[in-house]
Image 1: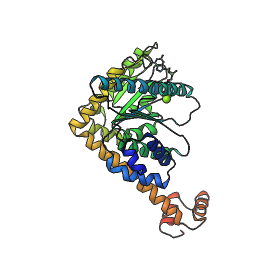
Image 2: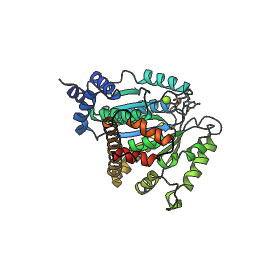
Image 3: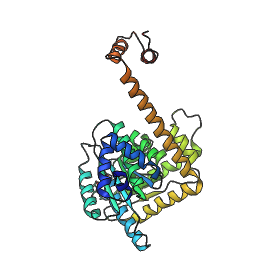
Image 4: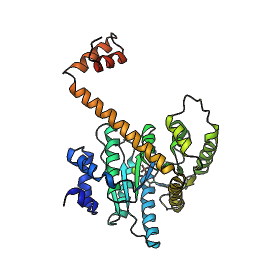
Length: 338
Ligand SMILES: Nc1nc2c(ncn2[C@@H]2O[C@H](COP(=O)(O)OP(=O)(O)O)[C@@H](O)[C@H]2O)c(=O)[nH]1
Ligand SMILES: [Mg+2]
């Protein structure tokens, strides 16, 4: 059996091997991914994003446990869930390791759960590309829900919003997150907002502040001519008609609020599918993936074809201010000097 066939047949070892090949951008793995592509499109992609230490890993762990148990009760014990943890090594994520260890312990041995931690080497763009590939492979392998845990830091959150169908933004009291959230444009990308660590004093304030900010940020109050609006917010505004972003308080360590969060995630999927927004998001997602790949491929190929030292030569001219960056690029593309 080929690796592709084994992955489709549910072979976990084959899947793990394929994911490594995709992460390393090995041609063989990327070819296998292409062969698997027709089998993708079935999974509900759920992005879980927030600052380090807000409790994302703990929460994801509880969500997965609860979803698996609920499946058992409904006689749907076959619900398969994958977790992709994208946690670029950060000097202040001491808690992440603990959360991940607890998660591994609780979920290890469940054949319907698959956890993958993304290695954090190379450029951020490479990581995003690898994550997209890993998610596609898991989708093809038949996981019904794929949770993508990312450390939110502005742009990364926006990128996740483009990768996931449902974006859950996690905050915690006392982290100044209410303010940060607004700065990073988090509210624009959140389909569901979670205030975790509701057991900590001050959680009420965080909840209140977020609800108030959400109320103010309702689409109607946007000025259509606001130059600071991102394209994404415009897209999302059009898409999000009829969905009111819920704000849910949780205590991940106790499992409190977890059932509510699961319900909100399921409601959002139902909303996306019922309103036709699922298809709209799917198109937007694939469009931006295609555009990104096209840009990257063209730039890489172009640079490979340049004579040795050509780029450096042009760079020197820009440094010396004898060419503007735009002129420099045009001169390379058009094969002229000045
Ligand atoms: N008090 C309290 N601590 C929590 C809660 N959820 C998670 N934590 C703790 O916060 C720390 C960071 O959690 P972790 O899940 O690793 O956060 P992540 O970096 O966002 O993935 C760990 O020590 C958790 O035990 C909660 O609801 N209440
Ligand atoms: Mg974590």
